[in-house]
Image (cartoon, rainbow, N blue to C red; front, side, top):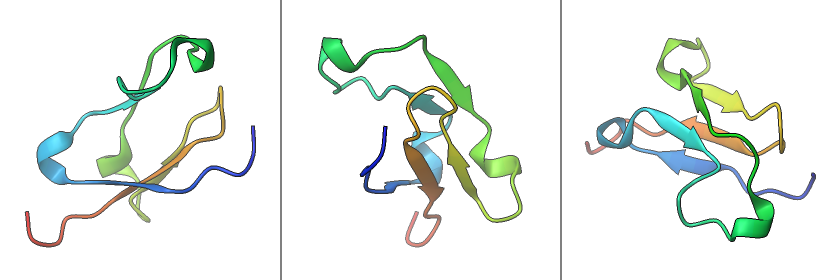
Amino acid sequence: MTGHKTIKVKTKDLPVRCPPTDRHTTELHPVVYLPIEEFIDKKATCYYCGQTYELDDSND
């Protein structure tokens, strides 16, 4: 899939789960947890759907 906007995630919302719980059921794929906090650039992309997540730890 393409055309996703990056989802900003707060530290308090870790771990990052894809698909997010608010997604429509037709968009579902197996649930994966992305260890975004372990990556240097604090970004992760789901290998099933291409959704990108970015850790936003400002004002936590």
